[in-house]
Length: 377
Image (cartoon, rainbow, N blue to C red; front, side, top):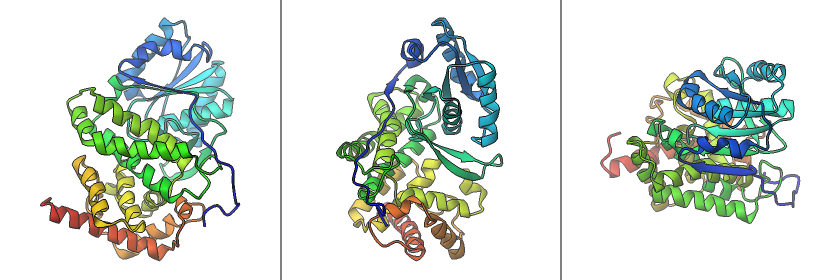
């Protein structure tokens, strides 16, 4: 049931500053000069080789003393504690996160534990996590443990598109899958409190709508540009939509069924499914969201067309689970309807049975679209 506590205040939250552009890392010194002079730079070994050395050189060239933290690969409480100890031992005065979602989530938790500001430098545009005031915390074995929420968003988010364009185009497409859910879910959650605990503002609705507009206008063009390493206006627009607009839109607008069904998919024990990226699984959840929203075929086809054009999954077979049983799908539906899941933000009747049939219907809609357009199943 939406808004059981009868919240009436509207709330919008965001990072203090967002910077995006090619070779932005070269100017990092002027953007972080007010933070302090002794940062902890958290990145994994691979990312450090791609962008970390250039970032360190830029910081040290501006008079910063950089302490390096090597991310171990999992955003767990143990990793937060381990890297946090390094930060304390070296008396750092702010945190810099360079990398993907788990690196960023770990750095946010460390900054929160130590009461320090954080600058986030994502190296892909695959999720909308960089701007948000939350982390997803896992157990050391990779199993989901809990969400961790913070009182403030990252102080600065800096996106160097000359780094982002080096990532495989699949990452950008996955970000499109994640961002494509933003506007649909926000519209379904418009009467529910958002992640800040207030009702969505008009500006959050406008951001969600603009995010969707950019994805339909430039999504395929941006992915094709990414494939050849071209930083085009379309690429820049989609990076912004995936990172900033989707980040602000989901946090201040709210989530609904697409992400809840994504979470429910952890109930299926299938290796291929679990190798799919976050946005790839959310894309199928978005088809389920459209089913629950009673979207007409014309509207459904519009979304499916964009997803297919950038290589996103639209059927259970695309996710590698074409032989999944009804029993397994019902477990997905039950987990999607767990207490406190975002699906309860929807202003309509929801039960595990309804969600189960939505999943089946989404798979059918995806297969039907492919058949009608001569695409191999």
